[in-house]
Length: 175
Image (cartoon, rainbow, N blue to C red):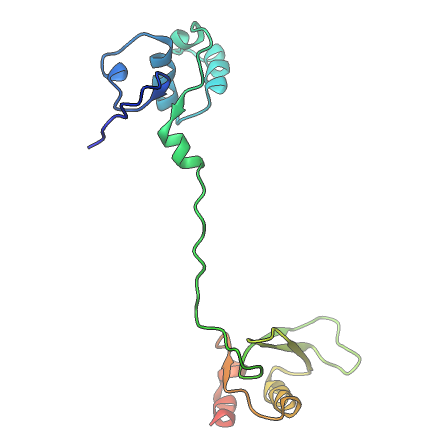
């Protein structure tokens, strides 16, 4: 159940406020009623809308009242911090874990005839390796080039599970 705030501030109104239940005709109660009915729009917008709308005559006749402080509006305007999602821990050792992705087919081929490219991003350092490929199936050749540059095989290779990286040829290579 909703409990109205018993704050001493006379301008603080709530949906459960006694002034609303008793159909109070004060300017604040009228503004509150229309603020609530019209989806919590601002007081100035209510005033200008009431001049052009039928059925809101009681509002358009009211003098300007102090700004209403609505808890619902305050909660809606408050921002909470997004929680950082950690999918897995970052490795401290350079060359241990790589993220990889392939892009293409590129309309204009490179001078060497490549239509695709693959990226390998080191998880620890963020260093990027980019290799141009003529065909998607050349992924294994690019992976070989990476291991030659590193001097060893990466322990973890994170992919987006596409066929060229996880297909039968790739599975034979990894085992």
